[in-house]
Image (tube, rainbow, N blue to C red; front, side, top):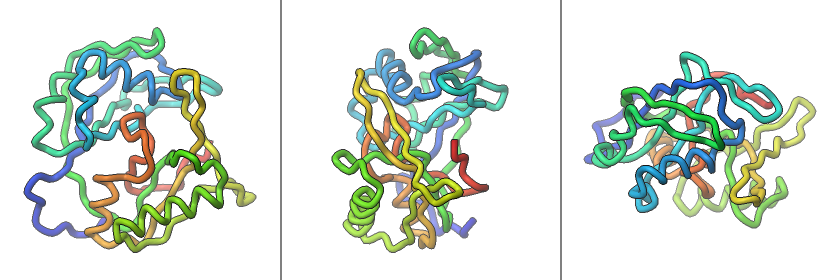
Length: 214
């Protein structure tokens, strides 16, 4: 991890809620967003909010098994925490699967050389080459200088992933971005790339080990 300069006036944090329950849909980005917004409609207006996928153990092909280490992580500016903190203690229903959220812990976003997003979606760019070019344009527009790669299978094929939203399938890819400066690493984690950040897409985290290719 890189050393971090003095904090920004309003830094972003990851707010992590412990999750208890049994199973949830493996592809739960949209159901999770819907469940949260049903209880807290204010999140529709929080344009700076990103929602990480809930952690757990995959039970392929359709379920995620929750463990004692499972958590829901929301990334947002620290001054917006009071709007979200009330999720603590709430029960959410994701396609008939119920989960309960505990008291959250917070962690300030810090810079890292290498960041990873399990799925990035850029509408209109479904094929790997066109997608990679579109993602690079987004980095260029933000003056982020880094090395961008798609996550691939051992044979070199880019891993295509999907999310389901109201019966529609959106296609995306896992993305790794390396050789980031401190400032660019913070910016990328705050803003992400692509769309559907409230549904777990385009949200970047530090690369701690080889990304899961399933």
